[in-house]
Image (tube, rainbow, N blue to C red):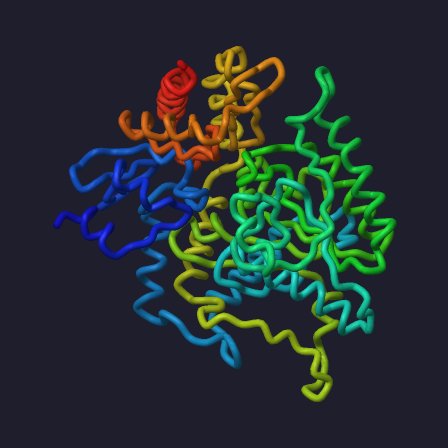
Length: 452
């Protein structure tokens, strides 16, 4: 059997209807370099989605690879309960140093708790917020406010605060009850209405929910600026500004899930910076290690940390743990990745790439079946619709986005749409010519998908 046949005999792939592989077998990748993946036959694919948004500086980056190899020769892993090591401490110091702070350090993140991935980072933040109020003697606070169209992960707590039926519908009976607020997603703004005005208007329902439920709410959780898995829907930073002020006013935590949008994706190192706010909990993962190893981190404040600090008999410790918490290899990969931001002006260069992405997709604004081309930093999304005027979507059963995906593979570009939303989130080492190729192939796929 070849590798694909062996795969089908034993593997169960994530986020996949396995029967699809009867018609389109998985592609066997043997190596990768830069923005390019190479399969077992030597065919190359431009990784336009950073392998599920994790890769910042390209595959097999020599600096990150060398850092991981050196670390593996000295210490591959040790438990972080009762022990410590240089990579975990150094990474925590670096993350705290670079984390978003409010003017005059009014609110500052000062403590780092490691997790295994994005979903578990969200779990940590939810539990920590709930447990904080309990330790403070406020047992009324047991609920969370989350946004419509949100996605925060697949573990049960993260799934509960998510709002995509495709992922959570089957597990409804297992999920905690969440207060749901309207999304500030600017796709639904009125003709002529700006992003800022619409996002500000959409904050009002959440403000009312906070006023009504503050006594029972632990925290509000959001994806700052871009709801990624929800179709790359985007909104204005004014929403974050107002949310931070409202949470402070009524005594509710703010959890910022920057798992997908952190580390330069939105044009700033962290999306929260664009609103000059700092959350009470900042969840990080994906790009943190440059796509090398799974690692999550939750940054929080001294105030939160202090609520768990006491003698053993107080029984207020935070006892959440993972076996691979603070894994030295993953921490070293993260330190090497963050070090690359120091070697050259990455964010400035990304702004040039973002302009190229905008120019390369500008023609699609006028496409009869493209409702919107939207962009935040290094993220561009193209939303396909059956009726552009009334924004009527294609029936989901037609899988128009999948047609684009299949065409992209035939032309050597990995485009994995979110339903009928075609998007680009490439590694930061992509060239302008590669961006133009990416847009060209996507346009061809869109023409094919909307031809009937």
